[in-house]
Length: 167
Image (cartoon, rainbow, N blue to C red; front, top):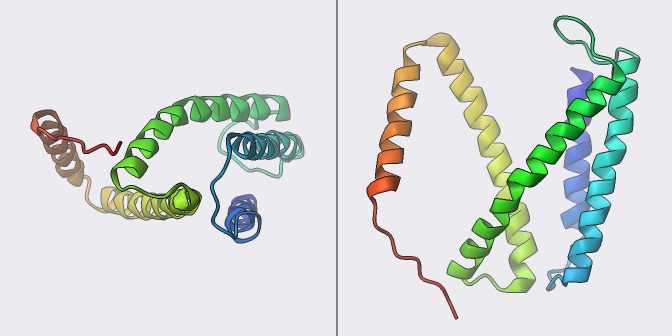
């Protein structure tokens, strides 16, 4: 439990540093600056694998079943990290479409993106907690959640939309 609390505190501190210190003033981010920051955050993520190795080797993490070795834990972490990185590439295009549609000036895009991600993480966490509690208490609610997903899928499939793109 303490590991998770420490992890969440670390992520919150890094996010606060990103917006509150490093990008306090809104400005247009150049490709060079974006690549540099990408390198910084990828390096931080890779350095975190060192902590994962020692946490599992020294059994700081308690899990059900057989304990995982540090090497296996790092491989699992890096595999998940690479999968998440590859899956996030499509988000770049979605974000570009949203920024274009709402005509967000480039100098404010980092701030808007940052707060959008914070909101998404908080609401996703809230939905997971509430959904898990509902599923634990009422198993039949699975059918309602399934019906909502099917209805939403149907609406997305049949809805005709036109996207307004700025020049």
